[in-house]
Length: 306
Image (cartoon, rainbow, N blue to C red):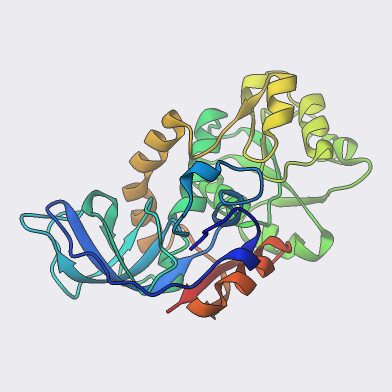
């Protein structure tokens, strides 16, 4: 729980009774809570203090422990004991959480709880970036931050579309980019020319999950149509330079991402979309885990396990 704005060191683990689900709600016994940079950023210094206190965590996986009267989950039905995942909720960093049933989906048996709890925020963000940039089969695109959580999902979803992806990463993460179907290129001085060398016919679109000035400058130089430059991490530059910035808090983005949930779960359940999990932490280590997450390059997704 965030009672004040600031970093993870200000968060508190609190005990309270779980609300019984009303009609249209279910209670989930949380087996894993997904961790995302948004968890930290949305209660960081300088954000809207009027929302406090804020229960942290947007996605979980677990087991249904109670169901409101006359209620079905998003995939239909639902009984106590069923394994589920949920996104976009609030307060996922918990042992139990009562949430709208419309945001709860049956968990594919092939997905572990930590993987399921980390699927939808990154996956839906990646799907929206590809959609807004109008990426199609045979396009060559550049992806900044290709080895991060959103980047890895973009790589996999772009491969399903049939697009070629040149992905920026540090040399130590090239194997990750290659492993998910991308062609790695190192960031740093000379980035634009390295991309041109790999794609002499040009790139159709640029997707930015890094947010650096270098990524933005290279994108602007490489892609003529600014409607096909999309960032999730450099809104200030997008506003100044006339390209597209996305955020889950935007109503259009929220609608798109909600509509993508069932498709992404089906892809993951059949093995066509993989969620690499690097580490799990106990729930009471949430502040330390969040600090580790924000330290950069955790090597995969992180999950809290109550």
